[in-house]
Length: 173
Image 1 (cartoon, helix red, strand yellow):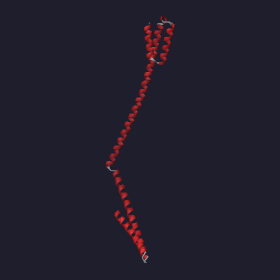
Image 2 (tube, rainbow, N blue to C red):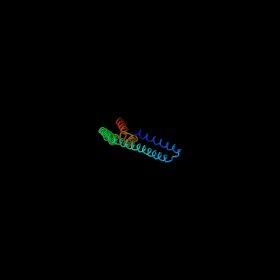
Image 3 (cartoon, rainbow, N blue to C red):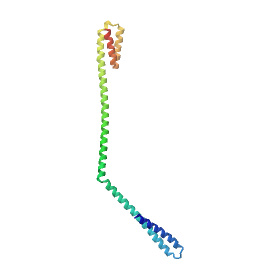
Image 4 (cartoon, rainbow, N blue to C red):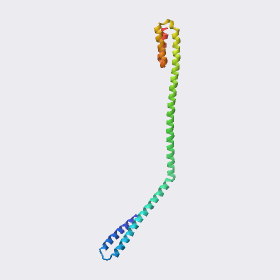
């Protein structure tokens, strides 16, 4: 079809050249006929090319639509959708896991710090009782220093310091 359109286009150009050659001859009516036939041939060639282009575009569009709705393509799109959903669920699961771990670690830290405070208070009370028992056997400045250390370690929740102080008081008794 394209060959036909190109042939008609070449024929139209040839007719225009013949019309120009006839222009040199005294018969001018012949020139008018060649121009009209050449114009019709040029219009026919462009019409054929345009029609062929429209038909080709329509055929390709129909083929692509049929291919899009074919069983294999539908199955491929379903697989991609399923894989996308699976990836999304996996990502959501990992994000939830991270969130749960984060809040669990915060809760553990809070419980540990509360437990440390509780133990430091009970240890400080035990040290106060030990100090009350040995108050008469210890010089007043040493007693005052141990009380201040006990208060300071209790405020800081320094369990190691309280244990060391208690060991010092026990060894001194």
